[in-house]
Image 1 (cartoon, each protein chain N blue to C red):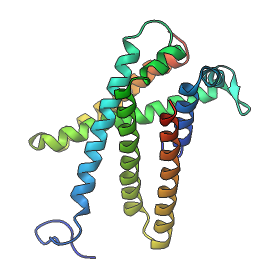
Image 2: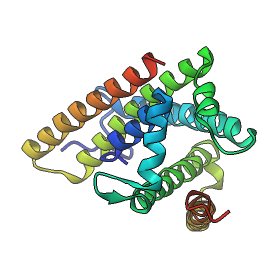
Image 3: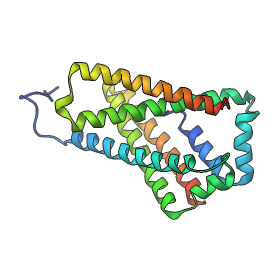
Length: 121
Length: 103
C-alpha cells in the first residue's frame, strides 16, 4: 500500500479523509444541538412527562425540521463511523464488502422508519 | 448502539404516535414486553444512555482537541480520557436513578 502519512504521503487521491473527518464533526454538532434543545424542553417542563407534553414538543414545525436534520445527521454519522471501523479492523475484502452492504441496508431501513414516524406526526 | 437502532426508533414511534401507543410504550417499561420484564428493558435503555453519553462527552473532547491543538499532550490525553469516563459514569448513575424511579 502507498504511504498515506508523513512527508512522503501520497498527495493525490479522492481525499475522502478530510470530507469524512469534517462530516463526522458537523453531524456530531447537529446532534449535540438537538440533544440540548430536546433536553431543555423536558427539564423546563413541570410534573411527569405526559403524552401531551412529549407530543407537544414535536408538534412545532421547527422541531420537526430539526428532528429530521438530526436523523439524517445520525445516520450519516453512523455510516462514516461504521465504515471506519470496518476499514480499520476487517482486512479480508469479501467480509468487509458484506459488512458494508449490511450497514447500508440496515441504516437505510432505519432512516426510512424514523422519517416515516416523523412524517405522520 | 448500531444494533439497537431499531429499538430506539421503536421507542420514538411508540411514544409519539398516539396516546394508545404511548400507553403501550410505558407498559413495556413498567410491566414488560415480549416476555421480558420491564426492568430489563430499562436496563437496555440505561446501557444505551451510557453509550450515547460516553460518545457525546468523548466527542466534545475530540472537538476540543481539534480546535486547541497546542493543548494536546500525552498527559492531557490521559487526564481528559479519565475525565470523560468519570463524568459519563456519574451522569449515567444520576439518569439511571431517575429511570428506575429512585427519585
